[in-house]
Image (tube, rainbow, N blue to C red; front, side, top):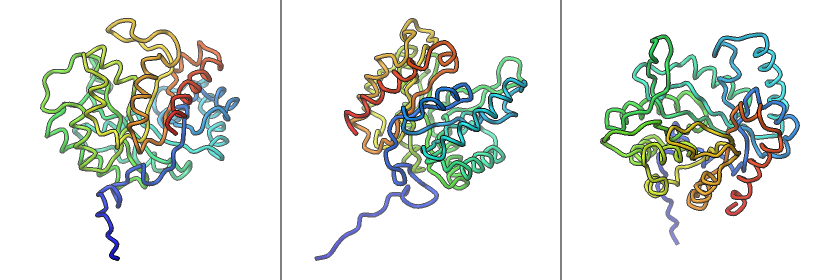
Length: 308
């Protein structure tokens, strides 16, 4: 009897590394910032893995005072300790993958150094471009136009990242904060074509999706029907109050039920999902006790266990 072997997908060979080919399910984790060091140190058994924003630990990211410098050094000691027995993933915030200029290779070199130090399972970024703020001195993240020109540019830049970093690369769906004019492609179509062309995976940010549903009239469930959920490797759920221009959509509690409902709607339809990350705003950490954060983690874990 002859055995046939299926033709491998592009992402099954370098440089197109898709996260689901390399990692076992991680479970439910927290996004670790310096402000979270006390919680992470005291409750490390409450979560399965740790996500980090590398830029939050880099002293030259923004002006440093003695207090912030001390906090970063203390957080790094906690991170080194936790990394000894917990998987880590990285979530960047400032690469500007949709920008017009050349990719910041110095930035990627620093990510690579941290990868060598901590062994991240994957690295994710926001699918944004840089836009100047009013004073012209700083860059702010802005959504991309979903058209062929932007797609071609982002595909090239994603492939550049994949060639430079030895780990899978994921991109996160956007938040718009305002109405979206008529575009050449919908966001799901853009994401699907981007993933097909590069083999990258997706981070589905539930808070972004829910905010867009309110602010821009986007149907969250229709979005889930149209995006390729087989590419979703990680889900972000925000624990904490968020200021939403459209009204009181998010209550001042951790893990609003609407986000958990969307989370459940995705979990059973995302066959290559590997992780659910709880994003906890620093202000929430300052204003709520550890018990509130633990409840947020456990709420997500209950949903996770329904399907894993």
